[in-house]
Amino acid sequence: MSSVPAKRFGEGPLSRVAAWVYTLLIVELLLLATTVPGLVPLILLERDPSNIPLMALCLLPVGPALSAALFALQHRSSDLTDLRPAVEFWRSYRANFVGVLKLWAPLLVWLAIVAVNLANFEAAGVPIWWAGLMVMVAVVATLAGINALVITSLFSFRARDVARLGLYFLVRTKAVALGNASLLVVAAGVIVLSSEAVLALLGSLLTLALLRNARPMITLIQKEFVA
Image 1 (cartoon, one colour):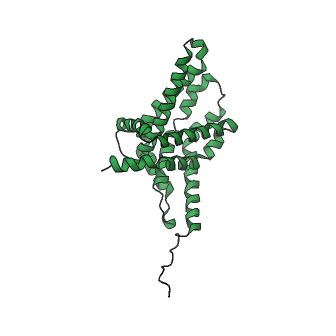
Image 2 (cartoon, one colour):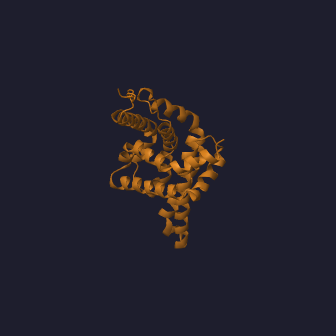
Image 3 (spheres, rainbow, N blue to C red):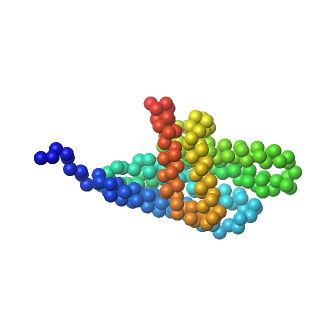
């Protein structure tokens, strides 16, 4: 008689795939629901430099929504009978809404300022090296901001500490920064080749990719900064 215990319901490969599909589907629907107030006007806006501030305003809901999606995917249950992605999503959305905006809003403001200046670069009459410097600072700020978004989504630190850790891990975990940069390129490519709507439909998959890419940083934070 075999001593190998029988697998319980939900432990097989098909069940695990079904659990992932269900979780990603629910997270995607919640991402769309929470970003619609900004997504619809963003799609309708003309691609004109004068609309850059409005575009940044439309992107405000993305921060809290992405944060909640990261939390829901990170805390996904491995038990098919105990999947609660919607509960985890809304719990994080309510708890982290203000904290995420404290980081997300200044980042959007800074990126909007850089974009407006670059769009009107010739009229400003500043040296070409200044444009290059602005682009470099914007890239660093964006990558550090992504780190900070992941950190504030999964850990309870003060906003200023989250900002510092975002910059710190930009240097400490260079592979994570490179992976995040690649995800930004993919996102930009999707927008150029299709539209923001298509990117939104891929939201849960991109969030999962972001979470998987940030795993080394998350592990280090758990070891070194969490008691």
